[in-house]
Image 1 (tube, rainbow, N blue to C red):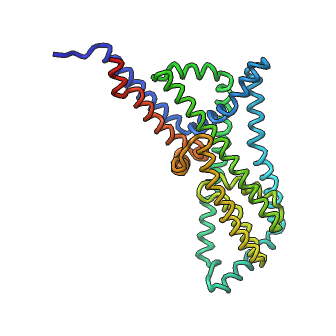
Image 2 (cartoon, rainbow, N blue to C red):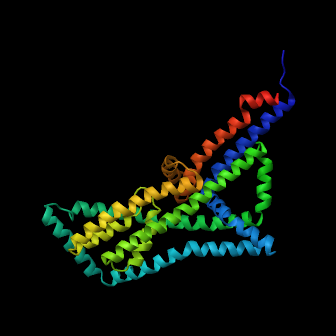
Image 3 (cartoon, rainbow, N blue to C red):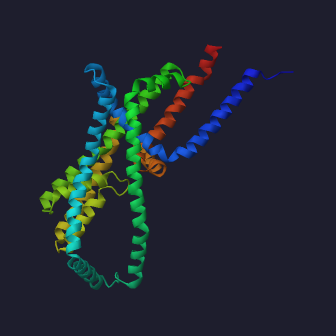
Length: 342
């Protein structure tokens, strides 16, 4: 008759307690996951410069971390400030000339109602539009507040990651129950995936913005710099992407009777901007992080539903990490390794 050792019982009980506490903590802190993932992304990008400042130039950790956080905040904030500044001037103009703007919109809609024998400004449609606006505005305001809160928490976590980076990595290396070679592989692959996505997304956004800017200048679009920023930001939105920028530009051309320019804008947008986005995005992910295009495509879809905007980066990483863990498991517990160890 076999007995279960006290050591095995204590180990199982301890694992159960760890799992229960981990589940409870995850449930209570799950709203902070995007901030944690964002801080880790920033840490991977900035830790090299942190080591240079503290190692080569002997800066204090707190001062070096504060400087890097400030610079990164400016890089993130500057395009948003420029866009808000441009948008505010347009909003002020629209408010000051609200009657003219509404009349021009009504004339544009009536023109196509008569041309195609459809009714757009019906009472039902207006009521549905009003209801949609009433429901959407609180969501937008709530999402804006949540985004600001996430950014604040992200930088709070990032400070401690930068200041205690070496100790954090050493502890993780010690705590992860894997062989040293697999622990190093896990860290190297994860950092590579984070780096490729964090660099690739803004790089592709700028590339699409530059392509859009060329088209806007050639076609004589007013305020091309404004539409360049809109294209850059829109390109980071999955599925629709830069169409949120060049389609409105084409509609403005059609509204002003410049149908040829409108058609050219749509052809250039769908044929050049969006096509190059798909090709270059998959090529860059494959080149930097050796990420398969299918992982990138499905990862973005999964990541957005799980983590929000930061899921653009961590969605593909999640799938790649799953595949990597399978490889590590096979390496750790394969039959051949077990025979050798026994």
